[in-house]
Structures are given as C-alpha cells and as structure tokens.
Length: 176
Image 1 (tube, rainbow, N blue to C red):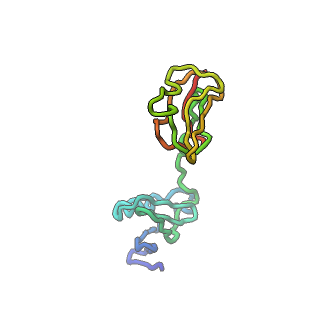
Image 2 (cartoon, helix red, strand yellow):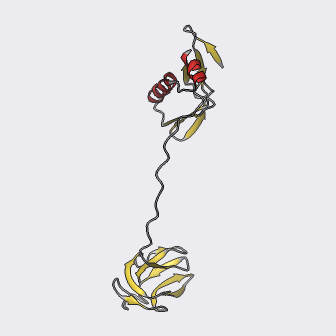
C-alpha cells in the first residue's frame, strides 16, 4: 500500500483515499522522542482539504479521521513516541440540593386537583405537612393520590397539569 515518490518521502494511502506524507525528519523526531510537526501540519492540511470533523493520532502511529458520522482508520505513519496530550474537561460539580423533592411513584398523568372544577391541592408558597395529598397521578385508569413525605413549603411545581410523568420524576420541590 506504500510507495516511494520522486522526493524520497513515504506516501501512505488511507482506506478513505487520503494520503499522509511523512518526510525524512519524521524519523529524526521519532528517535528524539519529540513531536513531528511536519506530520501535524500535513494532517491539518488534509483535515481542511477534505472537510474532516476530527483527526486523531496515537503514539503507535495510527490515525483515525472522522468526516460526518463514521470513523475511518488510517495506516500507521512515523510519529513521536508520546501521544499529544489533550487537557481533560473540568470536573462537573454537582449542584447543591436545594430542598426536598416529591417524586412520582408511577408512570402516568399528573393532576394538581381532584377534578377540573375543584381547587388545586397545593400552590407555590403553601406549607404542607407529612401525609398531606399534594397531587394525583393517574395510572392505568386509577387515580393515585400522592402525599408529601415530609413537612416543608412548596418552592416549585416542576410539572404542568395534565402532563405525562415518569417513574421517579420530581413533581414538587420543598424547602424545610
């Protein structure tokens, strides 16, 4: 799959038909343990020329390129011993839990009142006690009353009336 060109550099063809040229200084950079910037420049040129979304090179000389959806593995080229290290993304810090949540124990439909004409069970700012009914979740044609599991004040109603809810989905946020 490789051939010599008129300048004496090695020309490797990838499965996608792209060519990567590694000149004589690539061997010197490889033996010194440095990065072969000529190869990096050539990869950047190829990426721009073929509108590639991603080019990945490992320490073993394997190259992967991505254009749109799929990955194509390329033939090995002479590269530095050390792979180019990318900085990892910063760790995601969890958002502090600002209260207690009342969650749905069922998959079903959320209702804030026992009927369309009746007043709502609770509103934002209202205090609730443990065991107080806060809403109804209709599951399989059964109306299931959902009760507060602790005392607190309703800070936020997280679901709209008549909306489909999943098992474990937060319905209300309470503050102590």
